[in-house]
Amino acid sequence: MRGGGSIRSKIWRCVLVALVGYFVATLASFYLNMSQYDRLSMLVQVHFPQATLGNDILYTFKKQTERYEEAFLTGESELAAQTNAISGDLSTMLEQLLEAIKRSPHPQVSPAYVQKLQGDYNAYAHLAGNVYAHVSDVESSLDLQKEVGQLGRLQNQLLAGFTDLDKRLNTFLISEIEENKAKSLKSTIFLGTLFVLVLLTVTLIIDRVAHRLLITPLAKLQENVHTFSRTQDVIRPEYISTTDEIGRLAKAFWEMTQNLKVTTVSKKYVDNIIKNMTGGLVVVSPSGEIQTVNQLTLTMFGYNEGELLGKMATTLLTPEDESLFSANLINTLEKNGPMKDREITCLTKDGRRFPAHFSGSAMHHEQGALEGIICVFNDITELKKAEHTLKKMAHYDALTGVANRNLFFEKLEYAIREAQREERIFALLYLDLDKFKAINDSMGHEVGDLVLKTVASRLQEVVRTGDTVARMGGDEFTIILSALHSPADAEILAQKITKTISAPFSANGFTCTLGASIGISLFPENGSHTEILVSKSDYAMYLAKAAGRNTFCRFQEDLHLEDYLANSQQRNHEL
Image (cartoon, rainbow, N blue to C red; front, side, top):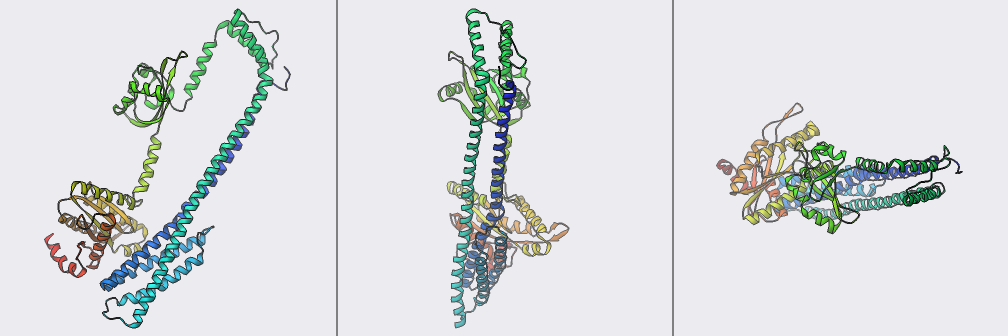
C-alpha cells in the first residue's frame, strides 16, 4: 500500500486537526466567557448600585415629604426638625450617585442632570427648613404662604425628577440585562455552530483518510471473514510490510481465529467503558438484585464489590426512597422510556445520606425480553449547597444574619394568613435605634456594624422560637410576634427589648449605650394588610421617639402625641 506514511501517521494528523479545532473552539469559548464576565461585573459594580441609589433617593424623598406633611398637619415642630435631618442623608446619596455616574465609562444619565436635581433639592431643603420651622404658628404671614406655595411646586418638580431618575436608572439596568441575555444567546449559538463546523471538518477528513487507507483494504479482509464463516478456513496473508497496518491486522485476524480471543477483547473494551463513566453505574436485575457496579459506585457508597453484588438495590437508598425500585419502575421505563435526573436521597455504608440524581433505562435481550435496568447515580451535594447559599443570600441580611426585607414581608403575609385562619392576634414591632448615628459617626462604621450584629443577637435572644426578627435597613428592625394571648403581651416584650438594648455595648475597645424606640401595631385591630400594619407600627415608633426615646408606643386610631406622653408613665408603671 502506497500512501505517504502509515495509518498511524494519518490518524495522528486527524487527531492534530481535531485538537486544533478544539483549541480554537476553546479559545473562542474562553474569550466569550470573559466578555460575559466583564459585562456581568459592570452590571454588579456599576449599573445595579446606581439603580439602587436611584430607588433609595426616591424612597427617601417620598418619606421626607410624607413626614413634612404630617408635621404640617399636626403642627409638630419637633417632627419637622427631625425630618430636616433626612436632607443630609439624601444629599449624601445624590453626591454618591453623581460620583458613581462620573466614574462610569457609560453613564446611564448625564452628570448635569443629576447636578440639576441636586441643586433643586438643596433649594428645596433650605426652603423646607424655613417653612416647617413655623408649622406650630397659628397664623402665617403672606410671605410664609408664598414660600409654602413655592415649596409645593419644588416638591412636585423634585418628585417628578427623582421618579424620572429612578425610572431611567432601572430602565437602563433592565436593558443592560436584556442585552446581556441576547449576547449570551448569540454566544451560545456561535459556539454551537463552531463546534459543529469543527466536528464536520474532522469527520470529512477522517472519512477521506479512512476510505483510502482503511475501507478498500478492509473490504478484502471482510471477504476473508466471509470465507471463514462459510468454510471455517482463512487464507493466510502472503506478505506483510512493517508499515502495512492493514496487512498486520489481517494476520492478527488469522491468528485470532486460531485462538478464539474475540470474546476476551470485547469484554475488556466494555469493562473499560464502565470504569471510566462519570456517574455511579449500577446494573439491576428485573427482580431488583445488583448485578454490576463500577468503581465510582463503590467509592460513592463506601462498599467493596463483593458487599454489593447480589444485594437488593434498595440497599443504596433511604427508607423514604426504597419504593423507587418497585415493580412500578419497570412498568414506567417500559411505557415512558428512560428516566432522567430524578432527585432521590442515597444511603452509604456508614449511614451517611446524600442527595443524588437518578437516571435509569431498561436493558433488553436481542429477542426483546427484559434483561435488567441500567441505573446511574450522580452526587448533587455541591449543587444543593450552592442552591442553599443563593437562597440564604436572597432572604437574609448579610451583616446581621437575621431576615431581610424580602423575607420579612413573606413572613408577615404568612402570619396574616395563619392568624386569619386560626382567628388569633399577633403584633408587629417596628424598632429604631436611638443614638446609633452618633456612635456610627464618632466610632466608625466597623464599630457600628458590630453594634448592629449585637443588637440582632440580643433581639433573637428575647423573642420566642416562632417569632421573626428582621432588619429593614440602616438601624431599623422589625419583629413579628405571632399567636399572642393579649395585646399586653406585646407591650411586655417591648419593655424587655428596651431594657435589653439599653445595656452597654462593647466593640473594638469602645463601650457605648443605645436606646430603642418601638412602635406596635396589632392584627387585626390595626389592620389586616402588610402595608397598613407596617405604616401604623412605623407611626407609633415615631410617637415613641417623640416622647423621649428608649420607650414604646402601641398604635391606636385616636392616639396623638399629647395623649401618649400623658399615659406613658402610668402604663410603664403597670407593666
